[in-house]
Image (cartoon, rainbow, N blue to C red; front, side, top):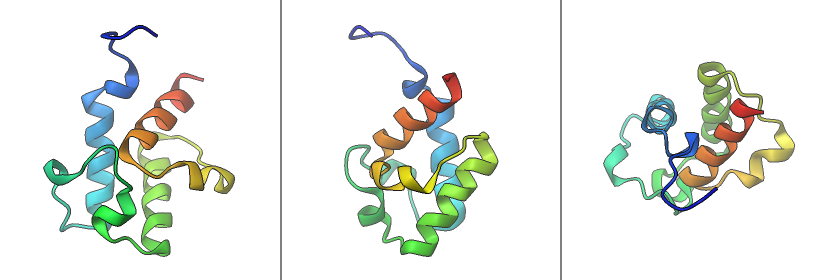
Length: 90
C-alpha cells in the first residue's frame, strides 16, 4: 500500500459503523471525541462485559468473526478499522 491510497480501513462508512456500534453500548460516547490511536476502553470507560458486547455487536453488524484470541489485538479505533477491513477482504 502506498501513502495517499484510500483503503477500506479509511472507509468512513466502516468507521461510522464501528462508532455507532460503540454508541449502542456506551450512549454517552461522542464519536468526535474518540482519538483513533488511543485505547478505546480508556476513552469510554468500558468494563469487560461492555467490551465483549461491543465486539459481539461488531460481529452482528458487520458479519466479521472476532475470535477471543484476537481480542487483545483490538485496542484502538485504528486497530479495529484495520482488523475488520482485513477480515472483510479476506
